[in-house]
View (cartoon, rainbow, N blue to C red):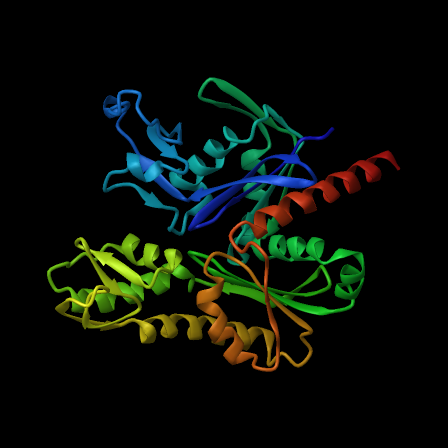
Length: 354
């Protein structure tokens, strides 16, 4: 049986498949945080509660990636948020380090995904991964790679979830697939699964822009914190517990009116809703300028970890549409990539046999 794997290195999270069991891809997801490490300080936990990370050396520098990478971080560690993207050390640490999690030394087809605005670099990415790679004490061979745009993965996931009759109907529909990611806000328009290049695009208005806008407001509310911890805002959004924890105190989120969550008075007030809306509405306006007013759009699909934060702005722009949020927004793209890769591999095999 062919070994298919999928790997989505996003600006915010990295998702990969480690196998296929009981009719489903097995998916592992973690933050795209890359820790620059000092080998002289490794193992300080003395064997207790070992971190779930893998270590990798890129251009002479040691990195750790994985679910616990932030525990190995210093101030030079970061997510992959720079224009060099696939050629950056951070991206390549995630790319090659993730292969160590894939439970395979030979991969027949590796499915990869890029933001729409980086689509021109697909051949560069493919050439980067195809071949034999010595990673730590293992040699991993990638025989072939298939690169798609990230929203297509979510569309493929959705297509699989609706059954044959639903898929037959989908093939006749004009679909808008929207992926608000951490770094970019991407969208593709398609006739069924056939993409329309001229009505697809993206902008650097993903969740990181929302966090930056919120941080600007919070720096005013907390004047003693000149460098407001972005990760605390990120945590407040995704835990969705209705509070943000700052300096050991819990403040109502996204609006604080001078009290902590346990009703203790504080000299802190903030309202983050205008900051959030300034980004989400700008992103959706750019989408609408490319896609149009939506009269011919039959279906809008929303995916990605930030989908619920952008949904209100998208619904406001397209009030007559029902917006479908995929079942598992964070892993949807990776799941669709793997399932699409299985079909792509069989199609290639049949083509070569003909």
